[in-house]
Each structure stands twice: as C-alpha cells, then as structure tokens.
Amino acid sequence: YGTTGVNKNGHLEVGGVDCLELAKDFGTPLYVYDVALIRERARGFKHAFDEQNVKAQVAYASKAFSTVAMVQLAEEEGLSLDVVSGGELYTALAAGFPAERIHFHGNNKSREELEMALEHQIGCIVIDNFYEIDLLKSICIEKSTKVNVLLRVTPGIEAHTHDYILTGQEDSKFGFDLQNGQVEKALEETLPFDYFHVLGLHCHIGSQIFETMGFLLAARKIVEKMAEWQEKLSFESEVLNLGGGFGIRYTQEDEPLLPSQYVSEIIKEVKHLIEYYSLKMPEIWIEPGRSLVGDAGITLYKIGSSKDVPNVRKYLAVDGGMSDNIRPALYQAKYEAVLANKPLARANETVSIAGKCCESGDMLIWDLPLPETGEDDLLAVFCTGAYGYSMANNYNRIPRPAVVFVENGNATLVVKRETYEDLIKHDLPLK
Ligand code: LLP
Image (tube, rainbow, N blue to C red; front, side, top):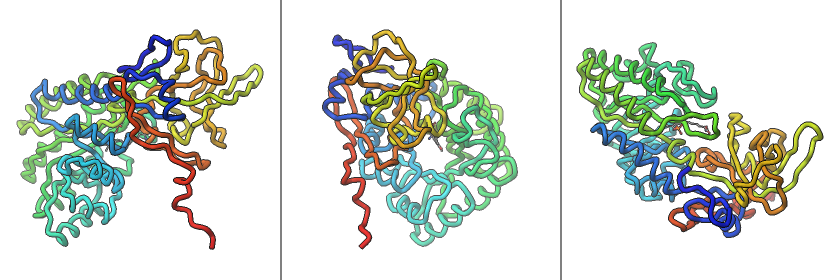
C-alpha cells in the first residue's frame, strides 16, 4: 500500500522511513501513518466528483481517527469534517479547522454540545430525532441564532457487513424512518421554523461495504421521496449526503472498489434519478472515514513471550493488543502482518498473535504465517489506521501508544505516548 515497501536493508519502510528506526525512536506499540497515502485517498474522492462536474463535499468522518494533526491534514486536503461529539468538535476547533466545513452528527447530542456548535457557527447539524428538533429549536430561539440542518434518514437498507456496524436498516437507533412517515413529519416540524435552514437529507447505511448496490438503493429510496416532498411540501433538497462506509482491503479476501469507483457509480445513479423525477441536482456529500485513513496506518509491536499448545497452535504475544486495537475482539476483524525486520523472509510456521491484556479474547490475529521469530523481532500489523487509535482504551491500565506521521523520509510525532502519570491524573485519593 502507498509508500510501504522494503528498503535496501531488507526492512519494512513507510514514507521513506525504516520501521526499525521508528520503533527505536518512538517505542512500541506505535501507530504509524503514511501521510502520502491519506492524501492520495482524499484526492481520489475529490477528483471523482470534479471529473463528473458535480458539486460535492467530501467530509472526513473523524471518528475513524481524530487528532489535531489529522484534522489539520484533512484541512490541507480541502476536506470537510464530520464530528459526532463535543470532543471531536473541540479537537477540530483546536486544530483550527474552518467551522463552516464542520458537520455535527450523533443520536444524542447534548444541549451543551449543540450550544457549542451554534456558538462556533459550524456548517451544519445533522438532526437525528424528534427530541433533537425540539432541543435545537429551543437553543436557537434562546440565542437568536440561525443554523443549517440536515435530517438523518434511515432508508431501510441492509448493507452486507458486521451487525454492529450496520446503521441503515429499519431497526436502527439512528435517524428518522423513511418507511413510516417520520421524515415527512420531521420536515413539517423543521421547514417552517425560521431559525433552521433545512439543507437536505442524510443517510449512512453502514461501514466496510464493498459493493455500491446499498448506496444506489438508498439514493433511489430517498430521491423518490424528494420528488414527493417537492410536490407536497415545496421542499427542494439542496444537499444529498450519502454518508460513508466505503470498504478497504484488510486481507487478501477483501475486495473493495477504489474511491473513484464508488463515487462514479453513485453519481451516475443520482443523476439518472434526478433527471427522471425532473428535480434540481443537489450537492452530493459523502463522509468517508475508514477509506481515507484505514490502510494508511500500520501498528508496530515488539514480540515477546510465546506458548506452544502441542498439536494445536503456537501463541506469540506482543506488547499491545485490544487496548490499541479492539476490532478483532469486537468484530472478529481480520488483519495481516509481517516481521518489519525481515518482511521478505519465508514463513515457516503458523502462529496466533496474542495481546498482553488479561483476557482470552485479546487476540489480534489467528493463524498468521510467519518466519521463525526471536527476541528482537518487530511485528507490523497493516491497515490499523481507522478505529484503532480512536477506539483505544486503557484496559489493564495500559497507556495508549504514540502516533507518528511519516512522509518524504520524515517522521513527526503527532500524539505522545501516554505515561503512567497520565493514567492516574484524574484519580483522587480516598482521603
Ligand atoms: N458517517 C456516519 C454517519 C457514520 O456513522 C460513520 C461511521 C461514517 C460516516 C464513517 O464510516 P466509514 O467510512 O468509516 O465506514 N468502529 C467500527 C466502525 C463504526 C462506524 C460508525 N459510523 C469499526 O471499527 O469497524
């Protein structure tokens, strides 16, 4: 992927920097990001819209990986930003991200979070439910502030992915149901309200999706309704936000499309539908998270203890685990890995990579072919850039790893490794 390759020392290299140097300079476990690949992915999405002459916003779903440096990189690449909490919003603002390009999501935004969003005049709030309509109205009145809103629609699509990351099906905690009149009711409650500018509609059907069918179906269902609402409510949707969810290749078994392929098929379908119903072409917004940063991230671990279960398997333990990557334990997610110090050495055994947490479920990779390993070996797990650091935790009071950006032969520390002092900094003694 990207700038990852093998250098003349026979070591794994990313962004022109030797992974052994990275481990030596910054310690392990270590999240390493190939910045050039993030830029390439971002440009791929943007270019696909430009090519088809479609007005668009590509909003980076910062839940995938939110830090000040990452937000600044998104800004450099001209992306918009999707945030889902006061914390992500705070990070974006602290990074100097232009407020007018921030979109605020979430199924239970608090009064404080909404107030913060209005105070900074962010680009739009994606209203999720009736409770939020009332809450946001009361805040707008109190502060005499206008705000752009999108309505989040649940289109009733079953995308093929893991149940926990499915979001567009009818039985979902998110959004107004398209099927049973909820969206129309929400439009009736929001359109006449002077402080709201209803920009349009949003849906997100799920995550790690490999085919375009789900997106096309969702677009079809929503555009059909747009035609109906144009007639009935004189509502013209200026924006159609089709969310994120574009899949990436974690292992050889995964067969994702390129960003440009997802985008061009979506545009083709939307254009066709819009023409069919004689509507005005809305701006198309998308919200990729994983597909912008996922395959740009590698985690480096030091290999430690091992255990043989004769005739069953060999466990090899690393110095991290579910505290820095909970995805295998939570979603049975699969990853590939090599030894960074000898990535081309022939594999002569099959091992299972265990984390160091006190939990049997803390396994990172089952049945990984590797060459024989020894004390100084460094394991590089690929494709950990999305939902790794952002879902990291301090289980067993393990400090979160550092994050390094590499580009053109330079490594930059963008998140410091947590210390033991960090771990207890909010603890108070009994007396
Ligand atoms: N937009 C909305 C409204 C979303 O809910 C999400 C993800 C995205 C965009 C970005 O989706 P992406 O392009 O990254 O697939 N923790 C899980 C993924 C949860 C995704 C939640 N929503 C994982 O590690 O697989």
